[in-house]
Image (cartoon, rainbow, N blue to C red; front, side):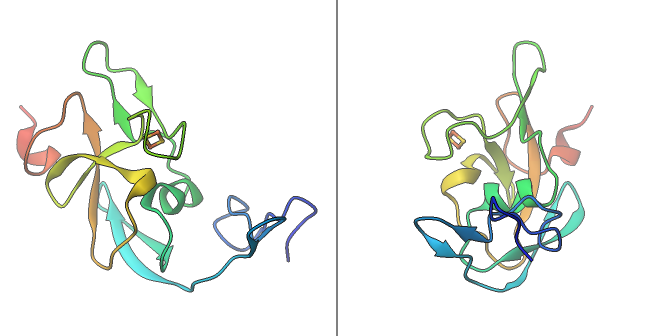
Amino acid sequence: MADARGLSATDGAARRVSTHPILGPLTGTAGVRLTFDGRPLLARAGEPLAAALVAAGVRVFRTMPQDGEPRGPFCMVGRCSDCLVVVDGTPNVRACVTPVREGMRVETQHGLGGWGSAAEEAP
Ligand code: FES
């Protein structure tokens, strides 16, 4: 059941807007399976990857190359690059404008990112 802000306690631990005043009720079913840093997550069909990660409690999507500062989604419209992640070994994927897909393997992007798994790049 949604509260006055449209947040549901049972869907994404109250991190999803279930009824938007302009867009209407949340659509799609929670049946898309993906992983983030090896952790299995369930996303809703048709939603952006960033929305699925935020709903799952993920706040750090990338770290900065200069100082390792954490970054998470900011603009949510593909402009700021704070939501860059590695998807199936491809770095620099903007999570906010990338739809979820069954079996996606998503990883935190460290620095400028690299091709292949982050685990493969570790020293
Ligand atoms: S949140 Fe700004 S580009 Fe994705």
